[in-house]
Image 1 (tube, one colour):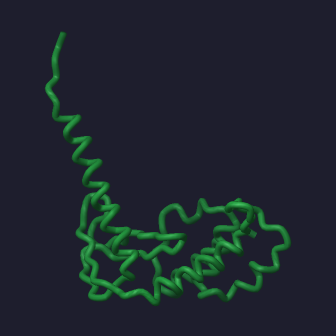
Image 2 (cartoon, rainbow, N blue to C red):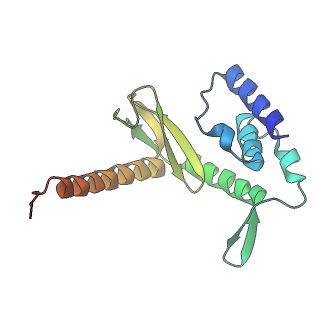
Length: 157
């Protein structure tokens, strides 16, 4: 079954001109189903919902959520994000994300893949832009802290 999912994902990605992440083939069967479902714009929803006992469940407070429950929550949150004000975004190329690549920016299970080196007017919801700015600020702080530690004086005893 897992091999069949991989074939379907590859074919659909080629058909739609999508570039798959390097690690996509290492995903579990359930995650491959979700990936294929998302690529088909939820055409597999009925098949996924017929699974009697999901392989993965998550305890949230007193409630246990299945993969299907989490997907529903993500869709609900995506709708909230789509209703937000959209703001401009441009991600500068760097050594980790060169021009032509995409940066995944996620919030509550919803991930936007933003192309690097391209200015997008009204490109992403305000919350997603805030997540990116926060991440960029924290990364800069961590890099500065490491640089300070690495540029200290070496003493030989």
